[in-house]
Image 1 (tube, rainbow, N blue to C red):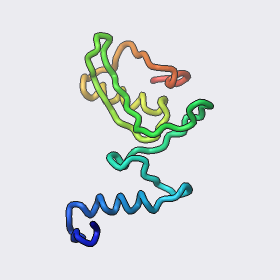
Image 2 (cartoon, one colour; image 1 turned 90 degrees about the vertical axis):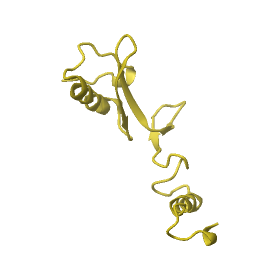
Image 3 (cartoon, rainbow, N blue to C red; image 1 turned 180 degrees about the horizontal axis):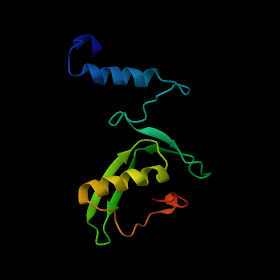
Length: 113
C-alpha cells in the first residue's frame, strides 16, 4: 500500500502510525497502545490485581440532579492533581465554585483550597 500512495497523501500519516506500531518492541519508548486513539497512555495503578490501565483520564463535574457542569480530559495525572483544574473550569463557566464537592477514593487526602 505504501508504494501505491504518494507521500503527500492524506493516508501517509496513518501508514507512518502503522509502521511505528509494527516496529515497536517491549522496551520501546512512546508505545502505541491504540491505533484509533494513539494518544492513549499506559497508566500505572500500583494495585496488585490491576497494575496498569490503558486510557485517558476524564474529570466530569455534575450537579446532584445529574446536570453535567464541566468535563475535562487529562493525560497521565493523579486524581488529586486534576481536581483543581476541573474546579477552575467550573468557575470559568459558571462564575463560582460548587458549594459541596464529592469524589471517589482517588481524591482522598487532597485538600482543595
